[in-house]
Amino acid sequence: MPRWRVWLIGMLVLAVIVAAIYFPILRRRLRQAAQVQQQSEEQARRELTQSLAANPGAPLVKAKLFWASGAEDGALTAVTVDLPLAKDPVLRGKQVLNTLLAGPVDAELRTVPPDAVLLAFYLLPDGTAIADFSEGLATSIPSGIESEQMAVDSLTKTLEANVPQVRWLKILIHGQEVDTLGGHLDLTRTFLVNAKPVPILPAAAPTAGSPAGGKTATTPTAAPSGKLTPAAPPGKLAQPGGKP
Image (cartoon, rainbow, N blue to C red):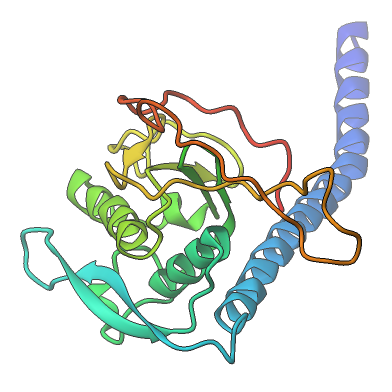
């Protein structure tokens, strides 16, 4: 037998041995990664229930949620839902977006895929909200600019109607900025929510001469001159350092 055939057979045998060792390890790692992703989305779904029940004793607020109107023109319609919304804008944003993701009574009027999950929601001092969704928002949405635009419009209109502190919306997919939603709509930009948002007021700091054990006296701050936020939407945002 020629020597090159011996080498070839030896290399093939070695490749089979390596594959037999490596493939089970690769399969186990893929299974573990899938379990981690599933646990993350299950945790987000638990937070949905917790956020909706965050203020069980609070008075109900008539929240406006925007789902599809049922027409073929991609229009949205506002539906009023009684929710115990929190006063904190971040928690309030989570509540209304999670309720929107839960979907309307008529499943055909959904604007986002049923397996889309809100993983995190942030609000920056300039009024830019960052909503981090699971991959289901991008992978399960019907392909087409109209369906993608409708999904984003339902998110922005719902935030505009219920969280007046939000001015812009930045959408992330599993913590990452992606180019498009389903292949058409640009997600590298931010989306206008409210041209005249309610300013986000910082917490008042205690004064040096406040009495011990008593209420903290605060000094009113002067209103800032000029616009609170830039006239043009911010560009690409740096990924937040950590999720709350």
